Figure 1: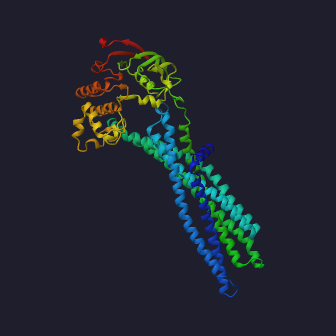
Figure 2: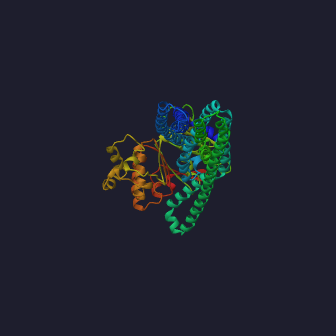
Figure 3: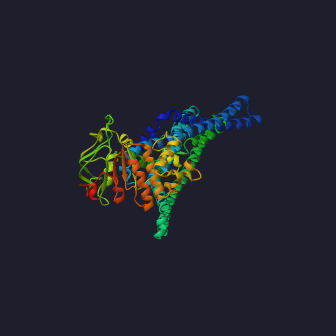
Amino acid sequence: MKDLWRLLKLFGPYRRWLVAGILLSTGVVLANVALLALAGWFITGMALAGLGLGTINYFTPAAAIRGLAIVRSVGRYGERLVTHEATLRLLTRLRSWFYTQLEPLAPARLQHYHSGDLLSRMRADIDTLEHFYLQVVVPCAAAVLCALVMTAYLLHLNITVALALLAGLLLVGVALPLAAGRLGAAAGTQAVNRYSDLRAALADAVRGMAELHVYQALTRQATHIRDLGTTLVAAQRRMACIDAIGDAAAALATRITLWLALVMVIPLVTADTLGGPQLVLIAFFVLAAFEAVSPLPQAFARLGETRAAARRLFELVDAEPAVTDPHEEAPEPAAFSIDFHGVTLRYSDSAAAALDGVNLHVDAGECVGIVGTSGSGKTSLFNLLLRFHDFETGRIEIGGESIRAWRGATLRRWCAVVDQRTHLFNTSIRDNLRLAAPQADDNHLWQVLRQVALADEVAAMPQQLDTVLGETGTRLSGGQARRLAIARALLKNAPILLLDEPTEGLDAESERRVLQSLATVMHGHTTLLISHRLQALQQVDRVVCIKAGKNLAMSAESI
């Protein structure tokens, strides 16, 4: 229940919408109960009057029936309008809140999560939470209010019938939902988890389709997806059975309560203590009263899904960020030199040191090449400078000031990064470039494209800057994608440039063009260049070798 209480607190900014939805739902149920009971009383009274067994005021009840019908129709429309507006606002807030909480965790705390799983939490799990307000909060609150009003009204007519109705409402509105919630908890949790696993498996299959073809693993992946789907369907089938049992039990309890009410009231009619129209009024009143509680068993059966979805969200947002930002920042340095003093980094307590006592000095405007075998800790230097991870011991300075004196966002604003896994979004070339400078006009964009020798190729495209690049930039060659990333770095005009294997995987001609572009970008910037390509290292002022997390000084002449 703790997760659900936390979820309710997130609804706070929209409490007026929530309360309005509850009140409208309560009004609709009460109007429907009153309409059915009054209509039964009126029809019976009219029938008796027609037989000459009594008289009846036709106008007042007829007007009341018309009024209640209007109230019910308008109220139902208003209730749907308000509750769905509240739900959409809640979903918007939940998604923005979740992303805001998620962003400080990236990438250190999210590296062990599958991207498909993260997407499932942001989309499917939050969509599941919409049922909490519509199917749990509103019906429960409305049921309590309606039960109090209806029981109080029946107390004026007949105490025993009122107590029988209250017992029936408690059975259908409390006992059955609790039982359904207990029975559906495991199935709901399993359904949410298997749905997430299925989305992750499908994402793997789509992204790795070429590899699955090459290694003839399509059948194995399809079998895995089918097994997950079978498990998901089995969980959903169990939940459907629980729903059906709950609905049947609620219907049975309704009929039993109606039968008990009739058993209590009929003797009063035969004894002329109560009139025939009043008998029908009570019967219809009792029958309609269960509209207030009949949705609750099914809602609580689905509560396991809601609880599991909320738990999956809070599991992520409760994680502590790997890096803590200072409350107040130091001023921007006059020069952007970089210093590592005895820096040690471990990615986890049980892991070996990725960096072990590293010392490195880079003057402002200097270009330093970094070489080393795979896994030696080269990229870890960048991760620390970008504040994606925090170091255990030592000190890292920019311009003579510890990097812990600035927020991670500030440090990343000072750094332009080009790595071997350049990410291009499935949008236009213009939008991809403007990630670095949102206010840049087209003239500025063409200028940086000319600087990286990409302008002619973009101009030859039918839509030029409006060309959509496709998923991860698939419409560009490897060299074009890398040069576009360099153009983005140039557009950012950051004082520090971090280059991680910028020519990896390129052919000789593409590498030559990328290196020409890099020569333009590196001029006047403090640059760290990770590479094992000799052509790239010829452009640096000096080279440092990283071996097993430790640095060995080398000169540019020795490469």
